[in-house]
Length: 152
Length: 152
DNA sequence: AGACTTCGGTCGAGATCATCCAGCATTTCA
DNA sequence: TGAAATGCTGGATGATCTCGACCGAAGTCT
Image (cartoon, rainbow over all chains, first blue to last red; front, side, top):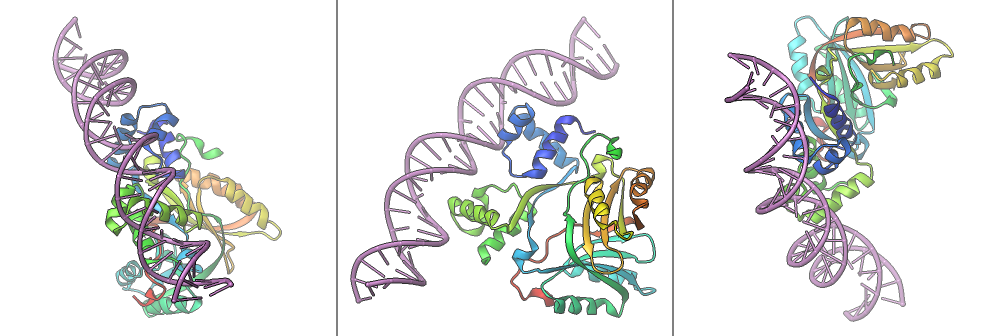
């Protein structure tokens, strides 16, 4: 499904999505039209979901991040999910197995904001919040290697 | 610190990091050298942490994701943190307040892999794992608006 | 006030890059 | 075996980026 060249291209683009076709081409040993075509197909197939930019939340004034576990009250699941989606400060949300239904990441500018946002769901769900003190690993893709690399 | 033009540029780039300088320029109403200079400074200041590509984990064979809460045994904190960093399948890890010290995202290709990886830290930490069933919100940046938009 | 400096911007020319197209090698399959 | 499909290359052409020169507004110093 993905060959070595595709993987090399992805690896380079993960590090710098603005690498020119020419550079990509010379790094993987192809011509630029070939690279262009490969990227087009990777996007088309959905392997590449998006070219994007990673912004430092601090630069936008978000000095605090929290992981919030959210357990909607009976019958409130959909309302809560919709609410979460609408609150732009939620930067990520997963629906998981187990007692807490959602695990979400919240960006806030102050403890006050945190309180304000959690208040908005307080009557529809139980929440439990953990403030992020450090980020040992920031978002990174899973290993690009062949399906066998689990025992690194 | 960031003016409206910077914010517009970031907004465009979040959607497509490969937008050409010329397009950026015409969309925000500047010349391309100006845009180029602004991007350079945004990178230099660390506002832009990276231009990157978002890859569908499924395309790499990772059919399963889990959120793992990890509570190192007494004295094992640093060993555990190092271990997590070294295991490439951890796609994200935050150190948080509260009882569980780390909250991490794990990409795996199968339940077997999940078990294998958790085994590697089982003797150094208590873990509790929640399988991700759906992703209501995939990674997105916090609102780019001015510091006041918290009460959306 | 007037002169100087800095900062961020424009413009235009030359260099660089992306894209289009024709053509070629390889593979697949009836 | 031959036809079709695939994926590559190289070169021409048009688009884009970069660099230097210059400009004007705003702040600073005498």
